[in-house]
Image (cartoon, rainbow, N blue to C red):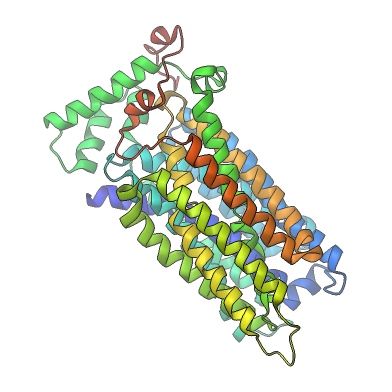
Length: 482
Protein backbone atom coordinates (compact mmCIF):
# COMPACT_ATOMS: atom_id res chain seq x y z
CA UNK A 1 0.00 0.00 0.00
CA UNK A 2 1.43 3.38 -1.01
CA UNK A 3 1.67 6.42 1.22
CA UNK A 4 -0.75 8.37 -1.00
CA UNK A 5 -3.37 5.63 -0.88
CA UNK A 6 -3.11 5.40 2.92
CA UNK A 7 -3.19 9.19 3.32
CA UNK A 8 -6.27 9.56 1.11
CA UNK A 9 -8.09 6.80 2.98
CA UNK A 10 -7.16 8.17 6.42
CA UNK A 11 -8.12 11.78 5.71
CA UNK A 12 -11.40 10.92 3.98
CA UNK A 13 -12.32 8.44 6.71
CA UNK A 14 -12.26 11.25 9.25
CA UNK A 15 -15.86 11.48 8.08
CA UNK A 16 -16.39 8.21 9.93
CA UNK A 17 -14.91 9.79 13.07
CA UNK A 18 -17.45 12.62 12.81
CA UNK A 19 -20.16 10.03 12.27
CA UNK A 20 -19.14 8.00 15.33
CA UNK A 21 -18.59 10.97 17.65
CA UNK A 22 -21.96 12.45 16.76
CA UNK A 23 -23.62 9.09 17.41
CA UNK A 24 -21.99 8.54 20.79
CA UNK A 25 -21.78 11.98 22.33
CA UNK A 26 -25.52 12.32 22.98
CA UNK A 27 -25.57 9.38 25.41
CA UNK A 28 -23.47 11.31 27.92
CA UNK A 29 -25.38 14.53 27.35
CA UNK A 30 -28.71 12.90 28.18
CA UNK A 31 -27.60 12.18 31.76
CA UNK A 32 -25.75 15.50 32.29
CA UNK A 33 -27.66 17.57 34.90
CA UNK A 34 -26.76 20.92 33.30
CA UNK A 35 -27.94 19.68 29.89
CA UNK A 36 -31.27 18.61 31.34
CA UNK A 37 -31.69 21.92 33.17
CA UNK A 38 -30.65 24.08 30.19
CA UNK A 39 -33.10 22.40 27.83
CA UNK A 40 -35.93 21.98 30.34
CA UNK A 41 -35.86 18.17 30.56
CA UNK A 42 -37.36 16.74 33.76
CA UNK A 43 -35.56 13.44 34.59
CA UNK A 44 -38.51 12.44 36.79
CA UNK A 45 -40.90 12.52 33.82
CA UNK A 46 -39.56 9.37 32.13
CA UNK A 47 -41.92 9.35 29.15
CA UNK A 48 -41.34 13.01 28.21
CA UNK A 49 -37.60 12.60 28.81
CA UNK A 50 -37.55 9.55 26.52
CA UNK A 51 -39.57 11.45 23.90
CA UNK A 52 -37.18 14.45 23.86
CA UNK A 53 -34.11 12.20 23.83
CA UNK A 54 -35.60 10.29 20.91
CA UNK A 55 -36.25 13.56 19.06
CA UNK A 56 -32.66 14.75 19.59
CA UNK A 57 -31.37 11.49 18.12
CA UNK A 58 -33.93 11.18 15.33
CA UNK A 59 -33.53 14.72 13.96
CA UNK A 60 -29.86 13.95 13.20
CA UNK A 61 -30.92 10.82 11.31
CA UNK A 62 -33.48 12.78 9.28
CA UNK A 63 -30.71 15.16 8.23
CA UNK A 64 -28.50 12.18 7.42
CA UNK A 65 -31.24 10.68 5.24
CA UNK A 66 -31.57 13.81 3.11
CA UNK A 67 -27.82 14.40 3.10
CA UNK A 68 -27.08 10.94 1.74
CA UNK A 69 -29.59 11.45 -1.09
CA UNK A 70 -28.55 15.03 -1.90
CA UNK A 71 -24.87 14.05 -2.14
CA UNK A 72 -25.70 11.92 -5.18
CA UNK A 73 -25.94 14.97 -7.42
CA UNK A 74 -22.70 16.56 -6.26
CA UNK A 75 -20.85 13.23 -6.30
CA UNK A 76 -21.49 12.78 -10.02
CA UNK A 77 -21.28 16.44 -11.12
CA UNK A 78 -18.58 17.91 -8.87
CA UNK A 79 -16.74 14.68 -8.06
CA UNK A 80 -16.12 12.73 -4.88
CA UNK A 81 -13.38 14.99 -3.48
CA UNK A 82 -15.24 18.31 -3.60
CA UNK A 83 -18.46 16.71 -2.42
CA UNK A 84 -16.65 15.40 0.67
CA UNK A 85 -15.28 18.88 1.37
CA UNK A 86 -18.74 20.45 1.07
CA UNK A 87 -20.17 17.84 3.45
CA UNK A 88 -17.40 18.51 5.99
CA UNK A 89 -18.17 22.23 5.87
CA UNK A 90 -21.91 21.62 6.35
CA UNK A 91 -21.20 19.38 9.35
CA UNK A 92 -19.03 22.09 10.93
CA UNK A 93 -21.86 24.62 10.65
CA UNK A 94 -24.21 22.15 12.34
CA UNK A 95 -21.66 21.54 15.08
CA UNK A 96 -21.41 25.27 15.83
CA UNK A 97 -25.21 25.57 16.11
CA UNK A 98 -25.24 22.70 18.62
CA UNK A 99 -22.52 24.35 20.69
CA UNK A 100 -24.51 27.60 20.89
CA UNK A 101 -27.58 25.53 21.82
CA UNK A 102 -29.94 28.39 22.73
CA UNK A 103 -32.93 26.16 23.45
CA UNK A 104 -34.24 22.94 21.96
CA UNK A 105 -35.15 24.47 18.56
CA UNK A 106 -31.55 25.56 17.93
CA UNK A 107 -30.24 22.23 19.18
CA UNK A 108 -32.60 20.44 16.78
CA UNK A 109 -31.49 22.75 13.93
CA UNK A 110 -27.83 22.05 14.66
CA UNK A 111 -28.45 18.31 14.75
CA UNK A 112 -30.37 18.52 11.46
CA UNK A 113 -27.62 20.49 9.66
CA UNK A 114 -24.88 18.28 11.08
CA UNK A 115 -26.91 15.30 9.91
CA UNK A 116 -26.89 16.62 6.34
CA UNK A 117 -23.09 16.57 6.45
CA UNK A 118 -22.77 13.20 8.17
CA UNK A 119 -25.30 11.59 5.82
CA UNK A 120 -23.46 12.86 2.77
CA UNK A 121 -20.13 11.64 4.15
CA UNK A 122 -21.58 8.21 4.96
CA UNK A 123 -22.36 7.80 1.26
CA UNK A 124 -19.35 9.60 -0.25
CA UNK A 125 -16.41 8.30 1.78
CA UNK A 126 -16.95 4.54 1.21
CA UNK A 127 -17.25 5.24 -2.53
CA UNK A 128 -14.11 7.40 -2.53
CA UNK A 129 -12.11 4.75 -0.70
CA UNK A 130 -13.44 1.89 -2.87
CA UNK A 131 -12.49 3.76 -6.05
CA UNK A 132 -8.89 4.46 -5.02
CA UNK A 133 -8.24 1.02 -3.46
CA UNK A 134 -6.71 -1.93 -5.28
CA UNK A 135 -9.07 -4.92 -5.20
CA UNK A 136 -6.68 -6.79 -2.87
CA UNK A 137 -6.79 -3.91 -0.36
CA UNK A 138 -10.43 -2.85 -0.67
CA UNK A 139 -11.52 -4.74 2.45
CA UNK A 140 -8.73 -3.22 4.54
CA UNK A 141 -9.21 0.33 3.31
CA UNK A 142 -13.00 0.06 3.29
CA UNK A 143 -12.88 -1.16 6.88
CA UNK A 144 -11.12 2.06 7.88
CA UNK A 145 -14.53 3.74 7.63
CA UNK A 146 -15.96 1.54 10.37
CA UNK A 147 -12.76 1.82 12.41
CA UNK A 148 -13.02 5.60 12.40
CA UNK A 149 -16.69 5.34 13.38
CA UNK A 150 -15.64 3.14 16.31
CA UNK A 151 -12.80 5.54 17.15
CA UNK A 152 -15.24 8.47 17.13
CA UNK A 153 -17.59 6.55 19.41
CA UNK A 154 -14.77 5.71 21.82
CA UNK A 155 -13.54 9.31 21.85
CA UNK A 156 -17.06 10.61 22.52
CA UNK A 157 -17.52 8.18 25.41
CA UNK A 158 -14.21 9.06 27.05
CA UNK A 159 -14.74 12.78 26.45
CA UNK A 160 -18.06 12.53 28.29
CA UNK A 161 -16.39 10.57 31.09
CA UNK A 162 -13.49 13.04 31.48
CA UNK A 163 -15.77 16.07 31.43
CA UNK A 164 -18.13 14.47 33.97
CA UNK A 165 -15.17 13.86 36.28
CA UNK A 166 -13.71 17.37 36.08
CA UNK A 167 -16.57 19.80 35.35
CA UNK A 168 -19.25 20.80 37.84
CA UNK A 169 -22.59 19.16 37.13
CA UNK A 170 -24.34 22.56 37.01
CA UNK A 171 -21.87 24.05 34.49
CA UNK A 172 -22.99 24.19 30.84
CA UNK A 173 -19.41 23.37 29.87
CA UNK A 174 -20.35 19.82 30.91
CA UNK A 175 -22.22 19.37 27.61
CA UNK A 176 -20.66 22.11 25.46
CA UNK A 177 -17.07 20.78 25.66
CA UNK A 178 -17.93 17.42 24.01
CA UNK A 179 -19.79 19.29 21.26
CA UNK A 180 -16.74 21.51 20.67
CA UNK A 181 -14.49 18.45 20.43
CA UNK A 182 -16.76 16.84 17.81
CA UNK A 183 -16.47 19.89 15.51
CA UNK A 184 -12.65 19.95 15.31
CA UNK A 185 -12.17 16.90 13.00
CA UNK A 186 -14.56 18.48 10.48
CA UNK A 187 -12.12 21.35 9.97
CA UNK A 188 -9.15 18.98 9.77
CA UNK A 189 -10.93 16.92 7.13
CA UNK A 190 -11.91 19.99 5.11
CA UNK A 191 -8.29 21.21 4.98
CA UNK A 192 -6.80 17.75 4.44
CA UNK A 193 -8.97 16.98 1.41
CA UNK A 194 -7.59 20.11 -0.32
CA UNK A 195 -4.26 18.32 -0.72
CA UNK A 196 -5.73 15.06 -2.02
CA UNK A 197 -6.98 13.98 -5.43
CA UNK A 198 -10.12 12.94 -7.25
CA UNK A 199 -10.68 9.21 -7.85
CA UNK A 200 -9.43 7.80 -11.19
CA UNK A 201 -12.84 6.39 -12.08
CA UNK A 202 -14.55 9.74 -11.54
CA UNK A 203 -11.85 11.52 -13.57
CA UNK A 204 -12.29 9.07 -16.45
CA UNK A 205 -16.05 9.56 -16.31
CA UNK A 206 -15.48 13.30 -16.78
CA UNK A 207 -13.04 12.75 -19.66
CA UNK A 208 -9.90 13.69 -17.67
CA UNK A 209 -7.90 10.67 -18.78
CA UNK A 210 -4.40 12.09 -18.32
CA UNK A 211 -5.19 13.32 -14.82
CA UNK A 212 -6.61 9.89 -14.00
CA UNK A 213 -3.41 8.29 -15.31
CA UNK A 214 -1.32 10.47 -13.00
CA UNK A 215 -3.50 9.62 -9.98
CA UNK A 216 -3.27 5.88 -10.67
CA UNK A 217 0.50 6.13 -11.00
CA UNK A 218 0.67 7.96 -7.66
CA UNK A 219 -1.59 5.62 -5.67
CA UNK A 220 -0.05 2.45 -7.20
CA UNK A 221 3.54 3.79 -6.90
CA UNK A 222 4.19 3.33 -10.62
CA UNK A 223 5.48 5.45 -13.49
CA UNK A 224 2.81 7.25 -15.54
CA UNK A 225 3.79 5.28 -18.67
CA UNK A 226 3.84 1.91 -16.86
CA UNK A 227 1.85 -0.80 -18.64
CA UNK A 228 -0.18 -1.53 -15.47
CA UNK A 229 -1.38 2.08 -15.38
CA UNK A 230 -2.51 1.78 -18.99
CA UNK A 231 -4.32 -1.48 -18.29
CA UNK A 232 -6.21 0.01 -15.34
CA UNK A 233 -7.23 3.07 -17.38
CA UNK A 234 -8.40 0.78 -20.19
CA UNK A 235 -10.39 -1.37 -17.77
CA UNK A 236 -12.11 1.68 -16.27
CA UNK A 237 -12.92 3.13 -19.70
CA UNK A 238 -14.26 -0.16 -20.97
CA UNK A 239 -16.48 -0.41 -17.90
CA UNK A 240 -17.81 3.10 -18.43
CA UNK A 241 -18.44 2.55 -22.14
CA UNK A 242 -20.25 -0.75 -21.56
CA UNK A 243 -22.30 0.46 -18.67
CA UNK A 244 -23.45 3.80 -20.00
CA UNK A 245 -24.99 6.91 -18.58
CA UNK A 246 -26.59 7.04 -15.16
CA UNK A 247 -30.25 7.68 -14.50
CA UNK A 248 -32.58 6.99 -11.60
CA UNK A 249 -34.75 4.73 -13.77
CA UNK A 250 -31.69 2.54 -14.34
CA UNK A 251 -30.95 2.38 -10.61
CA UNK A 252 -34.37 0.85 -9.97
CA UNK A 253 -34.46 -1.20 -13.19
CA UNK A 254 -34.67 -4.99 -13.16
CA UNK A 255 -30.98 -5.44 -14.00
CA UNK A 256 -29.90 -3.63 -10.84
CA UNK A 257 -32.77 -4.70 -8.60
CA UNK A 258 -31.07 -7.69 -6.97
CA UNK A 259 -28.00 -5.67 -6.00
CA UNK A 260 -30.09 -2.75 -4.80
CA UNK A 261 -32.31 -4.94 -2.63
CA UNK A 262 -29.30 -6.75 -1.17
CA UNK A 263 -27.61 -3.47 -0.32
CA UNK A 264 -30.77 -2.03 1.23
CA UNK A 265 -31.33 -5.21 3.24
CA UNK A 266 -27.77 -5.17 4.63
CA UNK A 267 -28.08 -1.54 5.71
CA UNK A 268 -31.50 -2.17 7.27
CA UNK A 269 -30.21 -5.21 9.14
CA UNK A 270 -27.18 -3.29 10.41
CA UNK A 271 -29.54 -0.99 12.31
CA UNK A 272 -31.67 -3.90 13.51
CA UNK A 273 -28.64 -5.44 15.20
CA UNK A 274 -29.39 -2.91 17.96
CA UNK A 275 -25.91 -1.43 17.86
CA UNK A 276 -27.10 2.16 17.78
CA UNK A 277 -29.41 1.63 20.73
CA UNK A 278 -26.21 1.02 22.69
CA UNK A 279 -24.34 3.83 20.93
CA UNK A 280 -27.03 6.44 21.67
CA UNK A 281 -28.21 5.27 25.07
CA UNK A 282 -25.19 3.37 26.40
CA UNK A 283 -25.29 4.86 29.94
CA UNK A 284 -29.00 3.95 30.14
CA UNK A 285 -28.23 0.48 28.75
CA UNK A 286 -25.57 -0.22 31.37
CA UNK A 287 -27.89 1.13 34.07
CA UNK A 288 -30.53 -1.39 32.93
CA UNK A 289 -27.97 -4.20 33.32
CA UNK A 290 -27.18 -3.20 36.89
CA UNK A 291 -24.82 -0.20 37.22
CA UNK A 292 -26.14 2.53 39.47
CA UNK A 293 -24.06 5.73 39.13
CA UNK A 294 -23.36 8.15 36.28
CA UNK A 295 -19.60 7.70 36.64
CA UNK A 296 -19.79 3.90 36.53
CA UNK A 297 -22.16 4.02 33.54
CA UNK A 298 -19.87 6.35 31.60
CA UNK A 299 -16.80 4.28 32.51
CA UNK A 300 -18.47 1.06 31.31
CA UNK A 301 -19.52 2.91 28.16
CA UNK A 302 -15.94 4.09 27.57
CA UNK A 303 -14.60 0.55 27.87
CA UNK A 304 -17.32 -0.59 25.44
CA UNK A 305 -16.12 2.01 22.94
CA UNK A 306 -12.48 0.93 23.28
CA UNK A 307 -13.45 -2.71 22.76
CA UNK A 308 -15.28 -1.84 19.53
CA UNK A 309 -12.43 0.30 18.24
CA UNK A 310 -9.72 -2.29 18.97
CA UNK A 311 -11.61 -5.22 17.52
CA UNK A 312 -12.65 -3.26 14.43
CA UNK A 313 -8.97 -2.62 13.72
CA UNK A 314 -8.30 -6.35 13.96
CA UNK A 315 -11.33 -7.24 11.84
CA UNK A 316 -10.73 -5.09 8.79
CA UNK A 317 -6.93 -5.51 8.81
CA UNK A 318 -6.89 -9.32 9.14
CA UNK A 319 -10.27 -10.92 8.51
CA UNK A 320 -12.42 -9.24 5.85
CA UNK A 321 -10.13 -9.96 2.90
CA UNK A 322 -9.10 -13.35 4.31
CA UNK A 323 -12.45 -14.93 5.18
CA UNK A 324 -14.68 -12.85 2.92
CA UNK A 325 -17.83 -10.86 3.57
CA UNK A 326 -20.47 -13.59 3.59
CA UNK A 327 -18.99 -15.92 6.23
CA UNK A 328 -18.35 -13.09 8.68
CA UNK A 329 -21.89 -11.73 8.29
CA UNK A 330 -23.46 -15.14 8.94
CA UNK A 331 -21.25 -15.95 11.92
CA UNK A 332 -21.55 -12.43 13.32
CA UNK A 333 -25.35 -12.50 13.17
CA UNK A 334 -25.57 -15.78 15.07
CA UNK A 335 -23.02 -14.66 17.67
CA UNK A 336 -24.68 -11.27 18.25
CA UNK A 337 -28.09 -12.88 18.59
CA UNK A 338 -26.69 -15.25 21.21
CA UNK A 339 -25.11 -12.35 23.14
CA UNK A 340 -28.30 -10.27 23.11
CA UNK A 341 -30.40 -13.19 24.34
CA UNK A 342 -27.84 -13.82 27.08
CA UNK A 343 -28.03 -10.18 28.19
CA UNK A 344 -31.83 -10.54 28.29
CA UNK A 345 -31.49 -13.56 30.59
CA UNK A 346 -29.10 -11.67 32.88
CA UNK A 347 -31.47 -8.70 33.09
CA UNK A 348 -34.37 -11.06 33.81
CA UNK A 349 -32.65 -12.88 36.70
CA UNK A 350 -30.79 -9.87 38.16
CA UNK A 351 -31.88 -9.16 41.73
CA UNK A 352 -32.76 -5.58 42.77
CA UNK A 353 -29.72 -3.37 43.43
CA UNK A 354 -28.98 -2.90 47.13
CA UNK A 355 -26.71 -0.05 48.34
CA UNK A 356 -25.15 0.32 44.87
CA UNK A 357 -23.86 -3.27 44.86
CA UNK A 358 -23.46 -4.90 41.43
CA UNK A 359 -24.72 -8.48 41.22
CA UNK A 360 -23.03 -11.43 39.51
CA UNK A 361 -25.78 -11.42 36.87
CA UNK A 362 -24.96 -7.78 36.10
CA UNK A 363 -21.27 -8.56 35.59
CA UNK A 364 -22.16 -11.46 33.30
CA UNK A 365 -24.57 -9.22 31.36
CA UNK A 366 -21.87 -6.57 30.91
CA UNK A 367 -19.45 -9.26 29.70
CA UNK A 368 -21.96 -10.42 27.09
CA UNK A 369 -22.50 -6.80 26.03
CA UNK A 370 -18.75 -6.49 25.40
CA UNK A 371 -18.80 -9.80 23.50
CA UNK A 372 -21.63 -8.40 21.40
CA UNK A 373 -19.43 -5.38 20.61
CA UNK A 374 -16.62 -7.71 19.52
CA UNK A 375 -18.89 -9.72 17.21
CA UNK A 376 -20.44 -6.59 15.70
CA UNK A 377 -17.06 -5.00 15.04
CA UNK A 378 -15.86 -8.10 13.17
CA UNK A 379 -18.92 -8.44 10.99
CA UNK A 380 -21.98 -6.21 10.75
CA UNK A 381 -20.03 -3.06 11.63
CA UNK A 382 -17.68 -2.72 8.64
CA UNK A 383 -18.99 -5.19 6.06
CA UNK A 384 -22.32 -3.60 4.97
CA UNK A 385 -20.44 -0.38 4.14
CA UNK A 386 -17.76 -2.28 2.22
CA UNK A 387 -20.26 -4.46 0.38
CA UNK A 388 -22.51 -1.57 -0.68
CA UNK A 389 -19.57 0.51 -1.94
CA UNK A 390 -18.23 -2.26 -4.19
CA UNK A 391 -21.15 -4.10 -5.81
CA UNK A 392 -22.54 -1.36 -8.08
CA UNK A 393 -21.17 -0.34 -11.50
CA UNK A 394 -19.41 3.01 -11.79
CA UNK A 395 -22.21 4.67 -13.74
CA UNK A 396 -24.77 4.13 -10.98
CA UNK A 397 -22.54 3.67 -7.93
CA UNK A 398 -23.27 7.06 -6.37
CA UNK A 399 -27.03 6.83 -6.84
CA UNK A 400 -27.31 3.17 -5.76
CA UNK A 401 -25.11 3.73 -2.72
CA UNK A 402 -27.13 6.81 -1.77
CA UNK A 403 -30.30 4.67 -1.76
CA UNK A 404 -28.77 1.99 0.47
CA UNK A 405 -27.30 4.64 2.77
CA UNK A 406 -30.69 6.36 2.96
CA UNK A 407 -32.24 3.06 4.06
CA UNK A 408 -29.60 2.86 6.81
CA UNK A 409 -30.54 6.32 8.04
CA UNK A 410 -34.29 5.66 7.84
CA UNK A 411 -33.95 2.66 10.15
CA UNK A 412 -31.39 4.54 12.22
CA UNK A 413 -33.97 7.27 12.83
CA UNK A 414 -36.69 4.73 13.66
CA UNK A 415 -34.42 2.90 16.11
CA UNK A 416 -33.16 6.18 17.62
CA UNK A 417 -36.66 7.56 18.13
CA UNK A 418 -38.44 4.54 19.54
CA UNK A 419 -35.66 2.76 21.44
CA UNK A 420 -35.82 5.00 24.54
CA UNK A 421 -39.56 4.38 24.71
CA UNK A 422 -38.96 0.64 24.32
CA UNK A 423 -36.27 0.72 27.01
CA UNK A 424 -38.57 2.67 29.33
CA UNK A 425 -41.34 0.10 28.93
CA UNK A 426 -39.37 -3.18 28.76
CA UNK A 427 -35.59 -3.51 28.85
CA UNK A 428 -35.90 -7.30 28.68
CA UNK A 429 -38.08 -7.07 25.57
CA UNK A 430 -35.59 -4.67 23.94
CA UNK A 431 -32.76 -7.25 24.08
CA UNK A 432 -35.00 -10.09 22.88
CA UNK A 433 -36.28 -7.96 19.98
CA UNK A 434 -32.85 -7.10 18.61
CA UNK A 435 -31.40 -10.53 19.38
CA UNK A 436 -34.12 -12.13 17.25
CA UNK A 437 -33.32 -9.84 14.33
CA UNK A 438 -29.64 -10.84 14.53
CA UNK A 439 -30.61 -14.47 13.91
CA UNK A 440 -32.90 -13.46 11.03
CA UNK A 441 -30.13 -11.53 9.26
CA UNK A 442 -27.71 -14.44 9.56
CA UNK A 443 -30.23 -16.70 7.82
CA UNK A 444 -30.81 -14.04 5.14
CA UNK A 445 -27.08 -13.87 4.31
CA UNK A 446 -26.80 -17.66 4.25
CA UNK A 447 -29.57 -17.91 1.67
CA UNK A 448 -29.08 -14.86 -0.58
CA UNK A 449 -25.66 -13.18 -0.33
CA UNK A 450 -22.92 -13.73 -2.98
CA UNK A 451 -19.25 -13.42 -1.97
CA UNK A 452 -17.37 -10.41 -3.43
CA UNK A 453 -13.90 -10.99 -1.96
CA UNK A 454 -11.09 -10.49 -4.49
CA UNK A 455 -13.31 -9.15 -7.28
CA UNK A 456 -12.47 -5.93 -9.10
CA UNK A 457 -15.18 -3.28 -9.20
CA UNK A 458 -15.56 -3.95 -12.93
CA UNK A 459 -16.10 -7.71 -12.32
CA UNK A 460 -19.21 -7.26 -10.19
CA UNK A 461 -21.53 -7.41 -13.24
CA UNK A 462 -20.31 -10.93 -13.96
CA UNK A 463 -20.77 -11.95 -10.32
CA UNK A 464 -24.35 -10.73 -10.26
CA UNK A 465 -25.02 -11.83 -13.87
CA UNK A 466 -26.38 -8.40 -14.73
CA UNK A 467 -26.57 -7.65 -18.47
CA UNK A 468 -26.31 -4.11 -19.75
CA UNK A 469 -29.52 -2.19 -20.05
CA UNK A 470 -30.71 -1.92 -23.61
CA UNK A 471 -29.49 1.20 -25.34
CA UNK A 472 -26.80 2.00 -22.78
CA UNK A 473 -23.89 1.36 -25.11
CA UNK A 474 -24.87 4.46 -27.04
CA UNK A 475 -25.29 6.42 -23.81
CA UNK A 476 -21.89 5.17 -22.70
CA UNK A 477 -20.20 7.26 -25.36
CA UNK A 478 -21.17 10.27 -23.28
CA UNK A 479 -19.82 11.22 -19.90
CA UNK A 480 -22.45 10.65 -17.23
CA UNK A 481 -21.06 13.61 -15.32
CA UNK A 482 -22.13 16.10 -17.98
